[in-house]
Image (cartoon, one colour):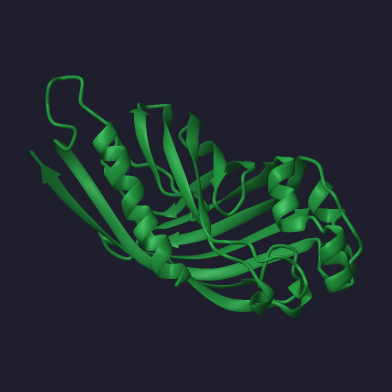
Length: 269
């Protein structure tokens, strides 16, 4: 259900952003060279944010957009986006993310806590290339349905080509969020405390996590790309102070996995 919903959301975001875009030279917004990349990632990761138990998971990888002025760095952490500004050093546009539901079926540690509905986060992104081997990207998103908070992700990736087909990349990560976000995923009110046995907790906003990630990407052919990746984050601030994490979880969160994707190139007039 999560995989199918995420796929539909990705395609929906593209359709909405493409409909809003128009070319300044009088051409249709769809005129030009495009790409569609589809694939999947399999990984082991915490059962939910803050959990101390991992499980095998998978997710679809779908990316679609106009071909840029040159090769661009991309990370599996990048959420589906569409750039309205795309030049040699800067890209900026809209971004979205599907947010899965969360309930006690995701872990016995959640028993007694309210169910979190599935939803989306929508907002904007900016990424900059200060050099030809470094990319910085920031996403700021507003929660819809699942939560009503604001989430900001920041990442810096250095990348180098070991061979023409093999690329090594990695760098630091940080996530911040508002009080509404933390209350949804880490707060414990009086009723939930009585039902779950967890201590009451009313969080504010702040830094959710800091960490680092890296990937080894192999361009097997002109269209096929595979990668192995690892991401580590340490929960901080309102997330780390939650009774859910302190009493039943772990501040250390590790994700390890592999992925494969195929890229289709096409031109629209």
